[in-house]
Each structure stands twice: as C-alpha cells, then as structure tokens.
Amino acid sequence: MKERNVARWGLVAALALGGIVYSSWILEFFLDTGLDPVTSFLSELDAENQKYRDVFGNADVLSAILMLISGALGLLITPRRRLYVTGWIALAVFGIATIADASFPLECSGEGCPSSAPDGLLPQLHHVHALTSSVAVFAIFTAMIAFTVGAFRYREHRSLRTTGLTILILTSLATVWMLTTNSIEVSGGGNLGLGIAQRAQVLGMSLWLCTLAFAMSKPLSTWGTASPR
Image (cartoon, rainbow, N blue to C red; front, side, top):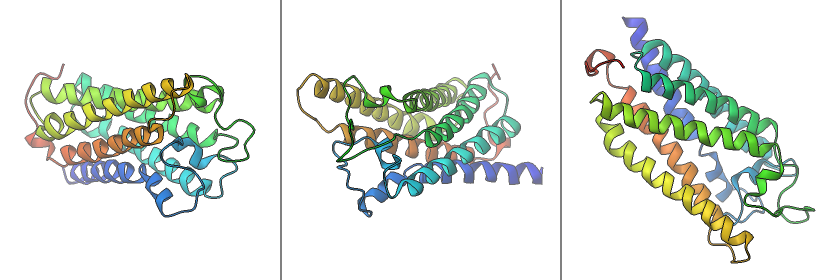
C-alpha cells in the first residue's frame, strides 16, 4: 500500500511538472527570440536556426518524458476503467508525438527565411513536423475528453467536472480561433492574433494537465465505486 501511495504521488508530480514545463514558451517573453508572439507559431521557437532552440526543444522533450511516465503510472495504479485507460494511453501517445516534434523541428523561422510562412491552411503542413504536431494535439485532446467524460460517467473527480471541463471548452475555443484566424490570413484577410490563439491553446493544455494532477492527488481508496466499464 505504501508503494502504491508513493507511485500515486509520483504520478501527481509527473503530471504537474509536465504541465508546467510544457509552458516553456513563456520564456520567449524573457529571451530575445526575434519572433512576434502575436503572429508566430510556437514551433518556430525551436526551429533549427533559432539560437534558443535547445531551451524550448529540451523543455518539450522533458515534458514528453513526464507524460510517458504519467501514462505508464496511470495504467499501473489507477482503476482500469475504459475511459481512463483511453486517457492514459492518449497521454503516452502525446508524449511520443512531442518527442518526435522536437526531433523534427522546422528548418528556419523568422526574418531571412526563404519561406517562413508558406501558403496553405497551416504552415506546418509543409513539413514532417506537421504530422507529429497534429498527432500530439489530437492525442492530448483525446485524453482531455476521455478523462472529462469519465469523471461524469463514474461520478468522481469533481475538479475534472468543473475546472477541467471549463479548461477543455476554452482550449477548444482557442483551437477554433487559431484555425479560423489562419484560414482568414491565408485568404488575405490579415492576421487576427494567430500566435495568441495558439499560445492560449497550449496554455489551456498545460493548465488541464495540472488539473488532472490535482484530481489524481485524491487517495485511490476514496475513488467512486461506479461500474468500471
């Protein structure tokens, strides 16, 4: 029982720290990256030509490793309920995709790049980075939805049903804002805060991970007794 309790707190720490580190982009406000947070994608921060790429790239890798640890611990020590199992697996996939994300950065970003903003719905779609980023975003949204629905289905984790649900909704709205804004920009309608939208999206993901950490801090013995299905 003691070992299980230690593992639970290890899970809490991994989730919380992973969520915090995933917001390493905030350091751009203290470092001279040369990128405009209002118009740039976060993936541009660790492009191969960026002088602080190791800072942001390594932070992503650390966060990804913590997500892999979280997924493994979650599967090992929490009740094997279908929605939660889906959530833990999705978090692990998110970790793998984020490592791949850091391993295949954009070649160039900022001024002087031959094509820092190629045509299309999303600039990243012209690079293998697009695939890894898309998988990562899809995976974490899958985890967010699975845990939120699970909290309602199994009648437990009040924080996921309140704070977590609120963050999920706001993060989804930020994602819609980002996609819509980029579509408008591509059609010549000007930039409507594309960078802000993506940063809001990622911030929401980080806050949700911390909310999940808080939910997991509840002793396993006090979890609801609903059907494990």
